[in-house]
Image (cartoon, rainbow, N blue to C red; front, side):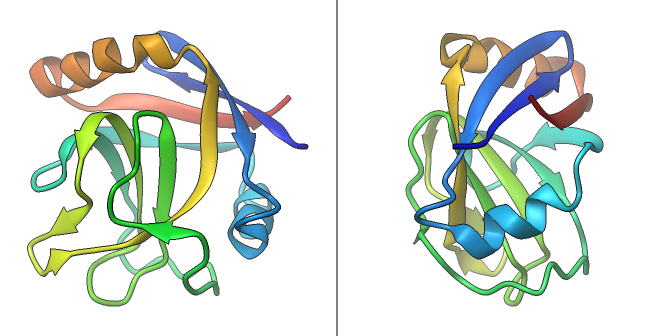
Length: 137
């Protein structure tokens, strides 16, 4: 089991890679670590923040994909209909884009600090983009 530390703004989370259910997505993401970017608030998906990745191609398809992630179930959308992105739900979410409903690969689950996700979501909504860093523990 591989665990990651996620630092979003000033909040720290611990998360578990879903290597059994999304092995290709997890392997591709591990190659990016440490991964630093910005999170912004979603436009169509409800209570979530996201990392837009544009045309970035990880060379993966769908696996363990869902449109209805629970709080703390992090998705990676491999691109296609919409741009490649990472979605981090902090409450009720239905993964969508301007092209319509999407399904992303559930590859990472927050295991510690999940109760701080709504705080992060509100901070991003009201204060704007925040730094985010994913690191292997």
